[in-house]
Image (cartoon, rainbow, N blue to C red; front, side):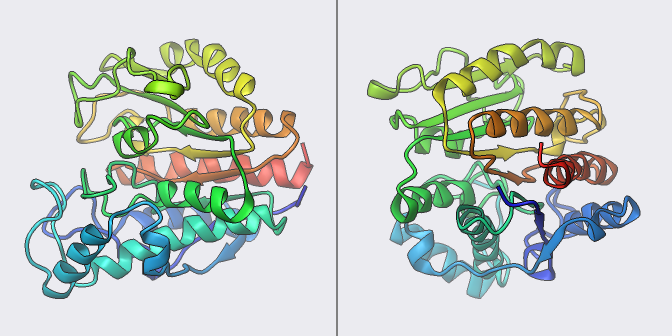
Length: 320
């Protein structure tokens, strides 16, 4: 196993953000990276520049018509890419393509043994569907990366673990009928928060029934209730024996986020990352990619995401 943790930072993914007071603003990467420098994590991780994804990659998950729409509205900067949450801006196609490129590049390099783990702060755009945007998300980077693992490396069993306050509907429904994509999603109950999905009875369709685990949590959920579910989560993942793990660590599940009602501590993300790393190591491959997801409180972004990166770094440094 490689002994390095990697982080992707750069203005190309930092520019994925919406102006005019939109919650998903372009300041989010700087909020993370400033805290990472304060903690000295920038000196302990391998820092890589963003990578641009081409249309061939985008169309592994998304329809050609949708990619054409994003490209067209990116030129004009006008209109929306969904029903009103995700406005176009000039260059949004390129910014979103960089997000995909980073997640795919990290996945490929981990498979090549170049480093043990990777974190991409502006990534994990889990609401993007195959044919449309949703909830501030234009292209589904993890969805694309899952297809790349299949097509390029023959990886069959893949786990996607999501602790963002919002249900990761784009990933869930994108692979709802795929029995080899294990989805574990702990989120604020969809009856109280966008996108209104992720009910406990949604466990996969057809041959995939039982391969998805949705855990809707009541508003106000803190660390104690959250971690009461961890034994179930750990068993679910370990029993499935995934060959690769994606971790969507949205910081909007931390107390104080302006648009959600979860109350996790800033250290919860660190502890989840550690536990997922332990599972990956126990399974013998150690492969994990962390993606930042949501989060609209700058302090929470910094502390929550830096906790994940720190867990990756500590694992790489100790080899445990």
